[in-house]
Image (tube, rainbow, N blue to C red; front, side):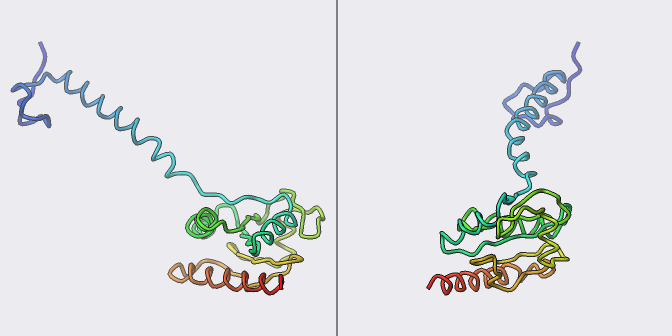
Length: 183
């Protein structure tokens, strides 16, 4: 015989009989959990995805594409495992790339991934970072024609309340420099 619980202990509507057998309750609860898991799993999986920026094969080509749209090339120098880098990338640069078409790429400190510099020479991410004199991540650089920096670098991300304003100001400065270069 089935063990039963009184209705007051059951979270089901009062239209059910006075007693619902315990095995049926377990089956209903299992169905609810599986159903909720099926619905929520894709959303939870998406929530755990870390936003990324493209790693350039050629900075010269990335710069040419940016200049072709009237923009500077924004380069984020990142470090694997850097919490501040994740914040800058996920909260500022990736959304700006998606919403506004910001021309932005990522170069990784300590990475030996190959890349061509602005002159077309083969090098690595780490060698570029060293050549640029970047010692702190995240760093955001703004390049115009010829691979020349056209706005002040953003170093670190220790002031989150103002970071967006600083980034917007640097982008405006870089775009104005690009417009002057084009005239």
